[in-house]
Image (cartoon, one colour):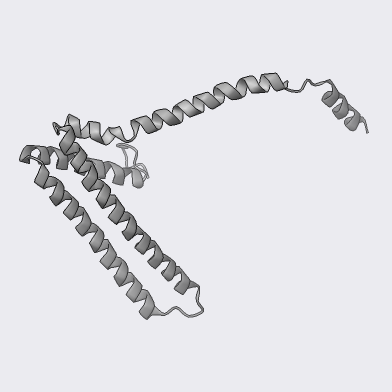
Length: 168
């Protein structure tokens, strides 16, 4: 009973956050968050265009490259949906009482075909981009793309920069 009385006394004597004070914090925090979002979106879409322009590619050609990449991303998304569907089919088979190895093999081969289609789409994208660039621009563009892919692969594996001693 004594603990209850002390708790009740603490509650009664504490001053709750005033509604005006609470509102005064909400507005600046909300505005800061909104500005952060707007700034993030403002920086995102233009970055690839700025990178292409730094490589000596004029804005018109950069826009064509952006369109080519957009078509590629759309095709890739469709292939990813196909791959996800096949993954679900595999999981469904795994949950059955007896796994049908014939179905598993068929699905795995379909996934291999989709993976090959994805690689072909990438080469088609590159071939189309190469036709609109000069040989020097292509060399610079391709080198930049290769470095970007290596960076992405490193980040996907959890490698954040060079670690001495292996890091594992």
